[in-house]
Structures are given as C-alpha cells and as structure tokens.
Length: 58
Image (cartoon, rainbow, N blue to C red):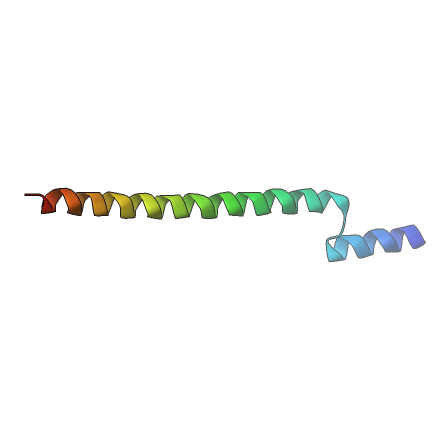
C-alpha cells in the first residue's frame, strides 16, 4: 500500500525517473532552438550590413 502511494505521489508531481530524461531532452531542444534563432538573426544583420556597405561604395 505504501509503495502504491509513493508511485502515485511521484507520478502526480512528475518526479519519476522516466520524466527527468524527457525534461533534459526538452531543455536541450529549447536551447538549440534559441541558439538557431540567434544565429539566424546575426546572419541577417551581417548580410544587411554587408549589402549597405557594398551599395555605399558606388
């Protein structure tokens, strides 16, 4: 009976060992997504500045 309560409690609060693996992969995926967005923005800004520099050379 005590084991069942412990399992229910861990499943309610999300502290089971299986969920921690999903949390880590989800966290990594969100970090990768954030870094890709930052790289995209930097690439767009660099391209824009380069185009302005080239056009200003005329």
